[in-house]
Image (cartoon, rainbow, N blue to C red):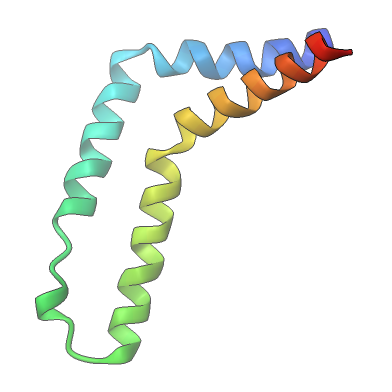
Length: 80
C-alpha cells in the first residue's frame, strides 16, 4: 500500500476513535430507529423513507466498510 493510501486510512481510523464520531453514530442510530413505517401514507413516502434509511445505513456501516477494505488490501498485498 502506498504511503498516501496508508495515510488515507489512518486518518479515518483516527477519526473513528474520537468521542465526536461515537456521538455522531449514536445520533444516526437514534434517527434510524425513529422511523415508523406504520405512519407511511403512500408509496412515494415509502420510497422516500427507504432512501433515507439506505443513506443512514451506509453511514452507520462506514467504519466497518473502511476496515474491511483496508484489511482486504493488506491481505492481498501479503499474498503477493
